[in-house]
Length: 75
Image (cartoon, rainbow, N blue to C red; front, side, top):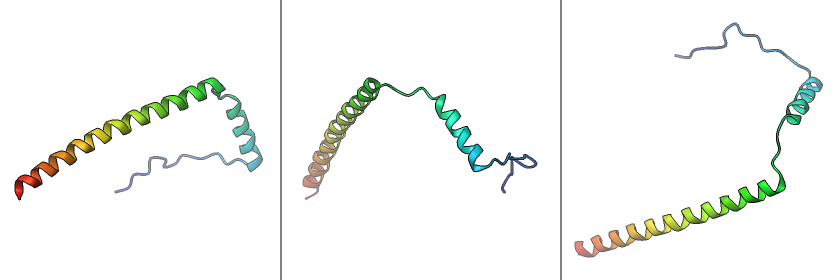
């Protein structure tokens, strides 16, 4: 059963020009990161992704060894 939570609520309609004006005003309020912050964040993402890749490589290799050992026992 679908519930319409906005029943009776009115949505203000704005012209495309007014919408663009509002977007520009909201964008001006954003605190944009500095170049240094962006680079540091990118470096941290690369480091964390690499660490996770190494971790999952290890886990996958361990499971691979376990499955191969179990298959050798089953022969």
